[in-house]
Image (cartoon, rainbow, N blue to C red; front, side, top):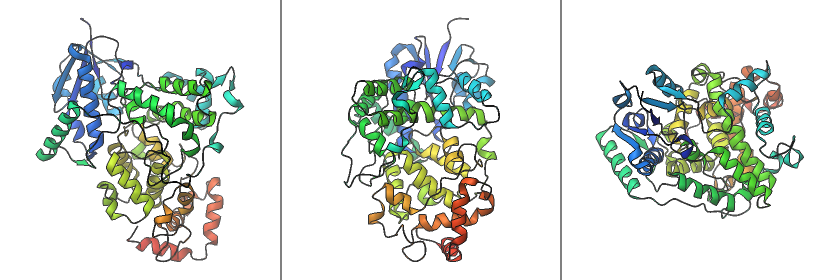
Length: 487
């Protein structure tokens, strides 16, 4: 057979996935029509694909069609680097397409299988995976020992925000070009034709769509925000949607940046004395620790993990405020600010995702599968592999404790401590009953009341449940939250 043509999916657009042979890129409109999608996400994917086509020149075969099958069915000359979703892997295998091992992560799937098997019946804890990964790769290691003598600097990385409107660390932004203009026109036409449903604001594009842009974004982060990333990685300010975060998850998930390149560059800044260890370790942990971990769990837990996981029997449909990204339907300042940022940018940082959006959804029993799909569709970095462990497992405790040992439920006190949201809110995080009762504070106790029997056997929930049983106004709180209309 003649030389194979490599079919590159949208998550495989960087140099790491190109070995120099002929390339196939397919822009299939049906991908954007499965469910409502954030406009910023659709724009970024299309822009990245079309920019890659332009870069590859006469080496690329490019098709704009309705479905992948319109191009690949009947061909015997294709190969793929293993795709990043169960459905895509099934699609290529059903057609007998030659499959190469996956790329784009610090560790490979065989490494994880070996590590998981070595655990026996022990839980597959992220911290243990992270330490094993560092020992095997040498990342942030001095011989057999972690740099600085400890593996984890979380105790240095949980500072509340400063008493200021912003951190004053404006990121580098890409400049749109003619490709972006064409993408915008096509999306407008698809919406007008009723072919796709898009949610959220239109532009400007804020995330890298090419390898060159991604490297500029990486260098900007390393030079100007990495030193402050660690201390403020969990903090929130209503006037600062980016804080000290890297904004690199989207280009990494598009394959435009190799994560090993990213963590090596961060480590080099530490060793050169340009960034503190706690910030570098926290950043490295996010990428080579958590990102790799959830990737491997996606395959380890199986395709049916989301649909078989509903330990807390959560069935409430998502509210319109979420589905339409409409902040005007929300009163609570923290939730309104987070949803508004999503509407404008298709992005929120990890504490907004976990302790605002996820915490709220957990308290109110939103359907975990619907919530998982919403996270995939509404975030520019949302992919089928990245969300299940994050949403089904960690955020919603729907798997009963496989990913996280306890539910990530919290009242308004946590949000008040880690943000400036509560100062301008009509609700009071210290109040659980009455007109100004914080829906997060009261919702926390209502959540514990609703799930007391399911959580009774979890030793990490013993103290919160004991507090619930001592709550003098328990019935009033539960009744109030059952009737609550304004939140």
